[in-house]
Amino acid sequence: MTATTPLQEMTREQLLGVVDKQYTVIGEKEEKIDSLQFRVSELERLIFGVKSERFVAATGPEQGHLDFGSSSEQQTEAPATETITYEREKSGSNKKPSRQVLPAHLPRIEHILDPDEDITGLIKIGEEVTEELEYSPGKLFVNRYVRPKYVKPTGQGNKIIIAAMPDRVLPKCMAGPALLAALVIAKFMDHIPLYRQSQMFRRQGIDLPDSTIGSSVNNVARLIEPLYQAHKRKTLSATYLQADETPIRVLESENPGSTHRGYYWVYQDPQERLVLFDYRQGRGREGPTEILKNFKGHLQTDGYGVYDQFGQREHITLIHCWAHVRRKFTDALDSDPARADVALTHIQKLYAVEREIKQLQLNSEQAVEIRKQKSLPVTQALEKWMTETITQVLPKSLIAGAIVYTLPRIDALKCYLSDARLQIDNNLTENAIRPVAVGRKKLPVRRITFVCTTCSHLLFTVCHLQSQKYQSPNLAHRNADQNRLTPHQ
Image 1 (tube, rainbow, N blue to C red):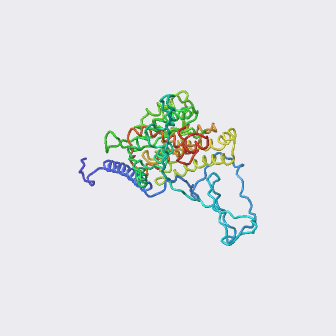
Image 2 (image 1 turned 120 degrees about the horizontal axis):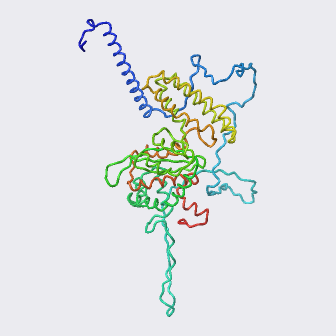
Image 3 (image 1 turned 180 degrees about the vertical axis):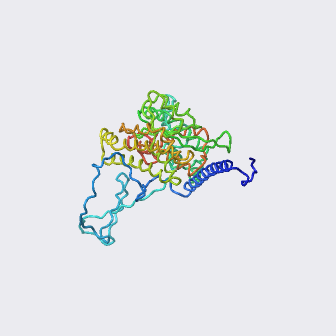
């Protein structure tokens, strides 16, 4: 038989072979169409839709009931109906909504408003106080240090006596500590590029080129290197860390106009809420291998292969993240809603147990006990379901991809059940990365030199640390006022 043989001249066996071949081709094309449709829907969701992973389980008679081993004796009948009466206020009530109380630490400027009429001889019986939140735009001012010179009378020497100049944050730099702190926080927490900050100063009549600001930011990074190293040691001394990474586009000063794809690697101690940012030029294993070379304990990550090496170390227990598993099955909802619904319902039960633990404020022993009673059977049922289902789905389908991602990691996903310290997912670290994502959205390519970028992991860490305690750019002055220190101290 040749490729041009008419169907009428083929034998029965040849026709069956053609049909089988066409079925195979059609199946491959359908898989490709499904894959392309998913990619299109994902792009549309990323551009136009919301990124929520909230899942609502299907309901109705067509939705099967999942039995997690409960016996028939444990099933209770529906309670009898009862009549409940209660009273409530009408929606048209004259009750005024309560106004939010303004923070007590804000300074108050009082304006005494006396009546227009003559109050001579009147008795004051009280007063009404109304508070209004006001804003004073940031302003620049100059600290002028005047040091008088003195000399002793004639015959007592010609030595000139003058006060020593206070230590400055950056020698020969015209910027004071509060201004330097504002520059750093505006850049790394508020994501205002240095050239825009330069434009903002220019509107106030001050010419500060962005190159000058960039040099100052670099010098600040070098100055607070000891603080970063101390924070790094404290964070990495924990016995439980979460790790994740996020990309960032960076302009290189050596090759004007060219960029490279860098990465922030983020390590968090969930118990102390300490976050460590580490910038690297790539996404290879060199970064985490160097940072975690002395780490011992539990390391929680996503399924990225770079982290697999830590699971083979003697003193490290690698645990995985249920949020990433949920994400995989959420992606499969459109192409295989029935099976994805089953998996997501299991995962939803796991998160319900975690909410219950938080609401009841259980101690460590109680948390582990309720996880073993309620969550362990769910994970076992999910594992059994995936083992049975993987043989029933197309190998290249999204639901198969989700199962293949989850099954090899199921033991690492169960680790959190036996230790109350451990989180069910890596969301705390993803939340810590969010400021980077916000900055990336505002400015897709960082207008920042390569040299400055190598310091940015340091500044990001310090800004994140400071923002937990002080929500003000004037950190130096605020600390100085509280501790009776000069700003440079």
